[in-house]
Amino acid sequence: HMPSVSFRSALSLHTCTTLTLSSLSATRRGLPKPKMSENGVVPRAKVLTIDTMNPTVKNVEYAVRGPIVARAVELEKELSEGMKKPFAEVIKANIGDAHAMGQQPITFFRQVLALCSYPELLNDSTFPEDAKSRARRILQSCGGNSMGSYSASQGIDSVRQDVARYIERRDGGVPCDPDDIYLTTGASDGIMTMLKLLVCGEGVTRTGVMISIPQYPLYSAALAELGAVQINYYLNEEKCWSLDISELQRALDEARHHCNPRALCIINPGNPTGQVQSRECIEDVIRFAAKEGLFLMADEVYQDNVYADGCQFHSFKKVLFEMGPEYSDTVELASFHSTSKCYMGECGFRGGYMEIINMDDEVKAQLTKLVSVRLCPPVPGQALMDLVVNPPQPGEPSYDNFIKERTATLSALAEKAKLTEQILNTVHGISCNPVQGAMYSFPRIIIPEKAVKEATDKGQQPDMFYCMKMLEETGICLVPGSGFGQKDGTYHFRMTILPPRDKLQILLNKVKEFHQKFTKHYS
Figure 1 (tube, rainbow, N blue to C red):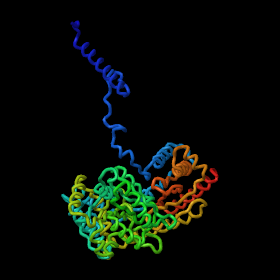
Figure 2 (spheres, helix red, strand yellow):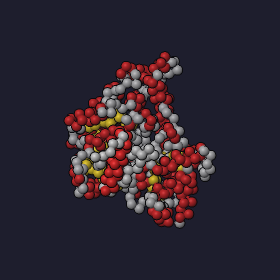
Figure 3 (cartoon, rainbow, N blue to C red):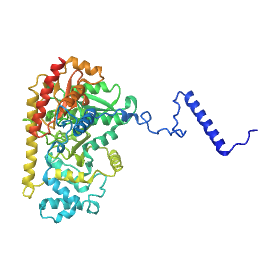
Figure 4 (cartoon, one colour):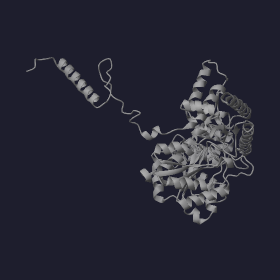
């Protein structure tokens, strides 16, 4: 029989006993002993830890906003705090963010968006009448005549109709059904959505997706997140980053031993490589997809960014339909466009669309359900997409200025593409293919063996080591080629051509000086 004790003492004894037993149990299981706080209470373990989180997320990498960019942000802060550096500013040439690099927005687009955002301005006589009529049309398509309302999940009906008419004009009259148009939060949202529909299976039946190497890291990141199998096919650098069907076949045949290849992704014009595919190449890709039973995904966000003589943008849909019913009635295709690139550069509005061709009706219903979960894309982005596909027309008040701004932007990009190629090719140890389109150069660099060894000893990729050194010494932020993929033993970096011409020339000369100094130091 135990002597009587107070309730508080008994509770204390019980708590201590429980804690001791708990600690013993943890120790016997090989777990660390729980740490007590100052008041003797064991803190609750976190539900979400690095060991208990979704493991596929840990496999996701996105070089365009990776460790180089994180260090660039730190350097900007250090400069603002008065720390001395060998440079006065950080130049971020790592990302295709046109307006951040100084490109001016198209006046008409911003006028209409201002009117839509603040309809009181419709009474302001300083706005042209065509901008006002366009704003009224967009607002009439919005719930409560406000861009602050949700839209239909697939996007505003009138915008999808305008996108369909734009595609028909672009493709020389090939019909387009607005019901096949899905407005998206930038092209990346549509790409991710389509991959979600495609990925299934386990082990050797797991979906494989073919992506170009070098590739835009959205694709590798999305496939890692979804647990899909990445199938690499290599572009031919010696032939201006061209695509060889024999290489597609090699990659596909090897992949079939360990996964179920179901989709082929094409970026045209290319990112990061800047090539523009010929019509013959697109026909070959379509025949290959038909023969091998692959779903085609055509990333065409740079379709207005074509600079090189003899190059022309051909949409996959147009070529598909011109090849006749054998292909146009059977090959499944999703194509993507965006407000973020071309001459618009309106990255922050997150506008885009995808068009689906030959999709199974039951799958299409599932696609519509999937996009409805996210309610709708941003309505201002949808409004901007409408203006891109339905800009001012001849005879309207804004037409002449629109054409002037559009032409000036694209002409400047073409000039800077040529300048980039010319200057980089004057550097011993750097070779740069012609920048035929898009917004980037992807030059090959020779890194001395001593530098390769030092990088390896530090656990870094040699081109990451190179780009980090360049950042620390010049303030120029580039993305190492290893973030996009490249053939073993080759090294590259990606650099945008977006800075103003004078700043781009300074940047290129700094790259030239750095490479010469780097090579001399490690030779």
